[in-house]
Image (tube, rainbow, N blue to C red):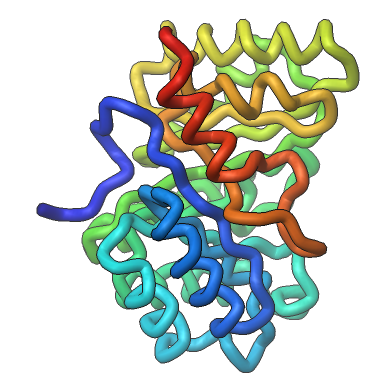
Length: 253
């Protein structure tokens, strides 16, 4: 059966890996598998430059024992600081060739914007061509916009619809909440996406986000991002795998 992040009854518990060296990633994969990881997310930009190659990618992916793998190749790292967006896109194509299941295309790839959504028609066409290439290689595509500030529902829906129009299989938007009121609004927006988008999505937030991060999977998120353990490189808002499993399987709704 082909690996996929689509059409699962429950949000996949996806353990994110931000590691400088493959040995660290492989050790974490081994531990996470024994704790019930259902998928993995390899953030390639966290690897030191000498490890950003197909041989290393295959070695890490092989350690995942057939689990679906989500890959990112973001700008925001010292390893990728001097790379062009065309080089980042080429990296995603290489990862697809290595067996990545789901490739993350930044929403402002080829046209850097504050809210990570390209507006240049030339850039949008390049994004759509890249998505077609990834699909031809058998990969699924997620488009991401890290807005990283509280964003009204209308704008979140607008970004989501645009991701879908550009050909993404999964929509990912990350906003923020400065207080509990905004966090509650983000929970409402999650439900709005479920009711109106008609496509798989992942809506997250930073800041005041503990509730949103943990129960978003019960409101419509198709993927749940978590970590095996927290260290200096992990995203602090991502809950532990052990906590996530308890919440997903223990809440009765």
